[in-house]
Length: 79
Ligand code: SF4
Image (cartoon, rainbow, N blue to C red; front, side):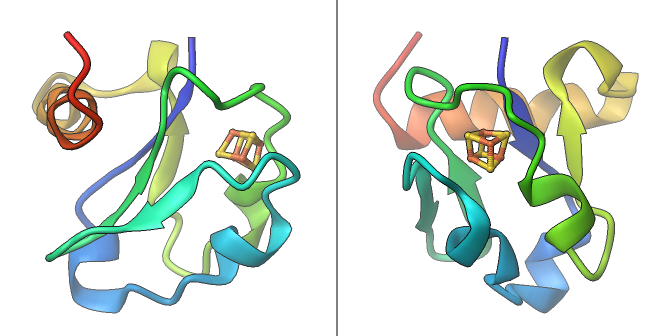
């Protein structure tokens, strides 16, 4: 399991999450930030840091936000 960054990040890219992540697994992509699902330790520190509430636990993703998990996996070359 991992945390996933969703659509509100695409207009914001505030990057506050990058500063609080203890394992440095959040990286800037072209249109949003991404969390590396293979490195994320599920600490949840990034969730309250996000000013636009874009970060969710993988298990809590809505149906339409599943695409953001796939997008993150693709960004990191995972499958
Ligand atoms: Fe980093 Fe913790 Fe957020 Fe995972 S849950 S991306 S480890 S701050």
